[in-house]
Length: 192
Image 1 (tube, rainbow, N blue to C red):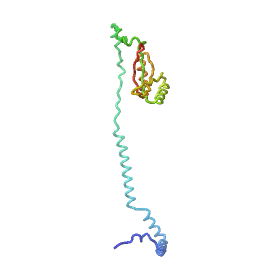
Image 2: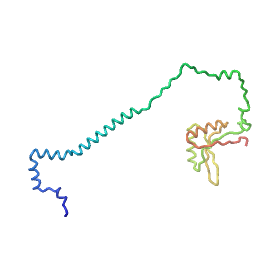
Image 3: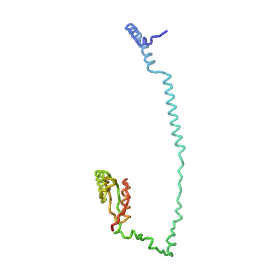
Image 4: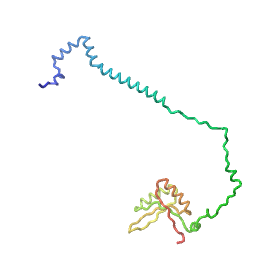
């Protein structure tokens, strides 16, 4: 048999009048309000769960304080002085330096014949090449652009320099790489 559950939510005017009469006594109103407000089993369960959580928290706090690793203290023996002996060992020694070790190779000795350039990019668009040139100029480099023709297309090559030595070019290359710019060193003969 089907039961109409919607009936329990419908209130007729007669039924409403009856419920108003039954609620008129103070005792019945208080009992209904307590039943609607407080559910004893839920309250007790929540109280018990809260007590358990507080207990676990306090236990873990005490447990973490007890298990702290001990601090080891090392004492320094101040009675024993530190003695450096390297100067005593070197007093009687003579050192002979080999001058050839510190000289540049023959092809690098004449810096007037070779100069070093850094190529930082080759662009197919002149606008991009000029933008790269402006960026490098703001970094403090001497920059120029050379146009090259490769397979009937123009390439705008951006160069930094010239540098009189490979060491100076290497320092500039390091500065570029620190800024995230990919580049490489090229040499150019001045005799030709």
